[in-house]
Image (tube, rainbow, N blue to C red; front, side, top):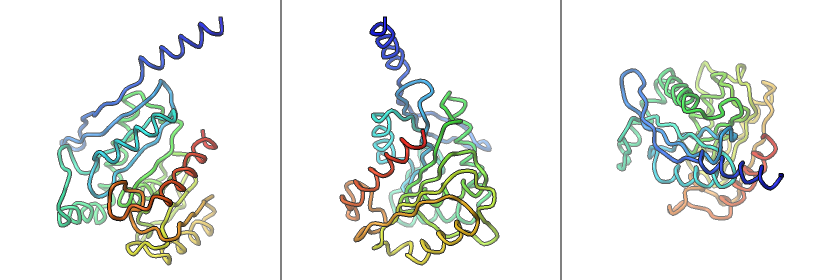
Length: 242
């Protein structure tokens, strides 16, 4: 009987497993997120892309999480089909959202709501983000979003003027390279002090020799040792959380 039940559970999980792009609208504009889920009610990782937009990199990370038993919803903060390749375009798109935090939060909330509409387990979820996405996931933390953890990988760490972490519901985990020339170690330290003073449970990890964007596989800044070490710790955090 146990073997039959296990087989049925496996078949059920196989039938449910899905990987697909989904289109949704925010204020009349179309956005395209990505879903990867191994089974019904799998714990959810809400993922925010870097300044390239939602590309093959985020899809790759979602597939890695799927293999580990976790669902992913990769949110789109730029708009369907908007995947900048030129540096100037990337700077423009991120700058627009950095300057309009209300819009950034609206887009993050819309993506999270879409994950819920798609039947993903938003009540048992963490949020992660890469580079620009790391800054965005901390914006989500400050907004009071209902996630168990907020985890930036080499993300922007500076708290905007007038904001704080008084509404933050979950823990903060930061993965940062000590050779990062974009986000300084001073910003890293400032965030640690702010979280401590606010009473937010946090874990701050650094990796020697790792530059900004150290997890981006295939890029010139990729740092294999730091990437593997941070992913290993991230995997442990997911197991402890879920």
